[in-house]
Amino acid sequence: MQIHTTIASLRAALAGTGRVAFAPTMGNLHDGHISLMRQAHGHGDAVVSSIFVNRLQFGPNEDFDKYPRTFQQDCDRLAQAGVDHLFAPDEKELYPQPQRYVIQPASAHDSILEGAFRPGHFQGVATVVAKLFNIVRPTAALFGKKDYQQLMVIRNMVAELNMGIEIIGCDTVRADDGLALSSRNGYLSEAERAEAPRLSAELRRIVEAVIAGRRDYAALEQSATQALSQHGWKPDYIAIRRQADLQAPEGDAPLVVVAAARLGNTRLIDNMEIAR
Image 1 (tube, one colour):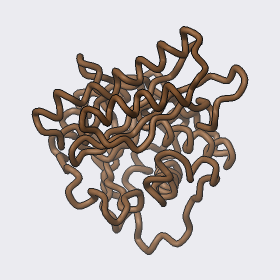
Image 2: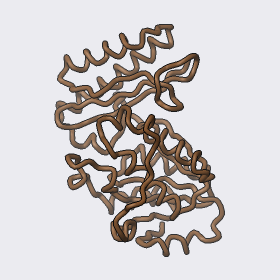
Image 3: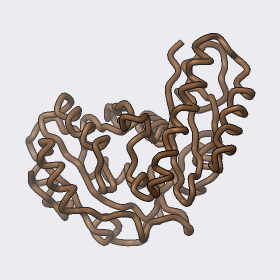
Image 4: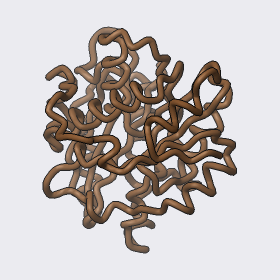
């Protein structure tokens, strides 16, 4: 695996390589990330990943400074997964001057759910992803479905800006007890880690209820919220929404249930698509 710290080095290495499959990350990799890398081989002649902790998508009271940096371990895992090129710029390389031009997602996509609790987050995500797409110039890009709203924002950005990149959503990778793999799981205490699978269990109950025919969505959301609260969680939201745009259910549009909740000092997110 070749490691590139400059845009010029990466572009020179990718010249004439054919189709490029790209899976960007912020490092601190887990098996979910590695699953993306392995799937990427089916979508390109060269597989590129990136490690960059993007300051723009962190709020003023969020964990940018303490976000785990495990660069050498990450490199070893990416190499074992067959990644051909790793782009690992510092902030001066990716943001050589203040980023005054930004990508602002549509308000209907940006102001709801995660966007309501993390103002500016998706502007930061969309801006850095657009920059990375312009640098890497992939034919396909892979993102995990665990960050469902992020995936939706990126899909719509690529479509509306005619970027011509195939966006591939990959299924969430879970631990044996159902907890969605996340870099932030490492913040959980032993007791919190034992409690954490309750979030996915509540989502699964909603999915099963909707498949069985229930349409009282607000009652299902409220029941799950209460169940979490009774076990020490602080839910931000549990919501049944349309998969395509995360708006309220309408007609027979495919649905997803999305959730975010704090357990101790750790904020966990998860979702499950509803097949019906």
